[in-house]
Structures are given as C-alpha cells and as structure tokens.
Length: 126
Image (tube, rainbow, N blue to C red; front, side):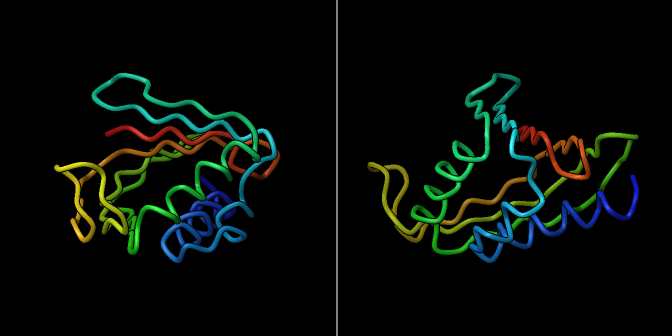
C-alpha cells in the first residue's frame, strides 16, 4: 500500500464518519462497485457512483451518529484489507427490534480495491 491509497481510505472514512457526502465520494472511482456481505452471503451489490450515493444517503437518513475506526490494515499492490470497528446510533425505528437511539457495535472487514488512483471497489464483510 502506498501513502496515496491510505489517504484515499482515510478520506472516505472521515467523510463517512462526519456525514460529509462530498468528502465520502471524493476518493471513489466513477465506476465504484460496493458489495455488502453478511456471514459470507452477498446481501447487496451497487455499481456506479450514482447508485452508491443514493445508498449512502439512506445511511445519512437512518443514523444520528456513526463511526468507523481502522484497527488493522494489510495491503497488497491494488487492494487493502482492513479490520474496522463500527458503531452507529439509529435515528429512526425499524419495527419492534430496532428502536430510535439503539446503538450497534461490531467488528467487520472492509476490502478496498484501487484503480486510476481512486477506490474502485469496496467489499464490506460482517
């Protein structure tokens, strides 16, 4: 991993944590692919910056606080695997089990892939 790749990841995460859409999208390639895997199963796949932005906006609407913190990082030539501590506070309720104000905490893995000095793919695994 080079310093540029780490800066891209940090910019993305800082934008995520501060609910700053412009900063969050800045390091992403226009052809970004986002995948969310839960217990090894692909739950969601988005392609392109417009789809990514639309989904990211939902996160802005659902959470009053959220934070990703990199605990470790392993790097390759065109990708970085991170272990991330994640916490979020719900802004809205979802049925009987998830109520406004509830806090979610978990440790997950995010894999960032790079192309053309941008993040081309993010894989979240929880």
